[in-house]
Length: 426
Image (cartoon, rainbow, N blue to C red; front, side, top):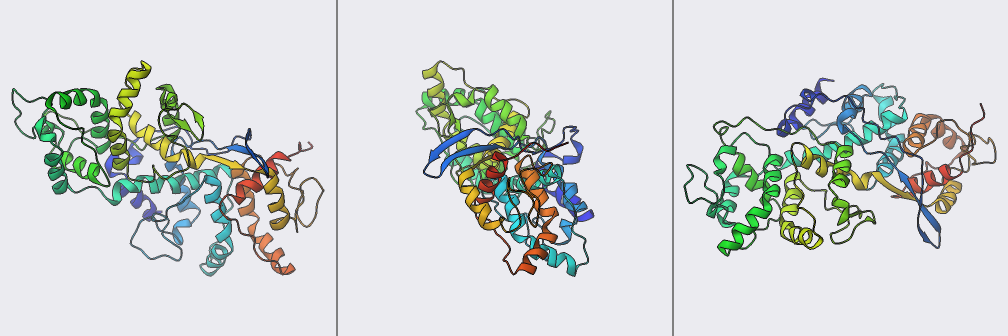
């Protein structure tokens, strides 16, 4: 237990300690079973498995220790463990793909647990949801630690991007166009500064136009280095330190739609046009938070022009809003899961049909159309994990290989199961 909480405290530094933030909402990623028809192809229509976004993605941290995952896996630590360091792995795909990876490696994990005399833990659907959310969140928060920015390089960027033309770093002057940024030294989080830059983007654009200066853009780690420079040193006079708690993807979703971001940006093909689809399954948001802020800054002039064209007031953020928005965009592809039931039917027959049926009664294992509680993706994955040892023994007795899922296959099978669920007799 000590190790995992030490890691969490270390990861929390940019926002203060996570434990200091009072949060009462549970982070439940339990899937909503409502499915809607999507793209229709030669294999039949796909359906959307709507997975709830987490409110507090760090809720799985304690479970990671309690379920003894920490015995075999570290999280961005220097200690060598039996299993891979889960804090350094880029988990691609959806929440179902991540949970499917658990399944693929479960025989090896059980073997190692047996060697270490660890009893495999039973996991409820909500616990499985919290664990996979935590592992995804940890990678998200780690991006702000892995490369905190170089203040020396940041000072050079400050000069090269001509920020000094409007902002002094000490003293200020009567002819200075922008505020003296020295007051932010040491007292503001990187996200506070990124949010302030965004909020004042329109004013800065007008000032630069008057000066005949080009809008500065940032690439790679430049924004992180600049923010490191602006934050370096002692706390500015009269400024209380400003911190952000870890973002809430669920709150970020509400802010995204509440501020009409969906007017110009679609999420997975649903929403407005004019800006890029932010839920297209790409890797735009698998970067550091500073890099994401840099991307927003780079596109600020184009977005301002689009606001004016549409007669929309420029969106600004306050308090926790930007970090929640970024958390939402980071998690959105993780929570949007599509599966094709007809493809899943073929996969089910190949990977599961030797022991289970869907609608044809009990075989070696139960008919999965009537098993109580299999009402969502995470519930199915949790049940598979909990019964993995007995399934592995049965497959060995029959001389059958352990079925493995490639990317997207678990979603197809789950879509097939959910599409053929029957009411459980009371």
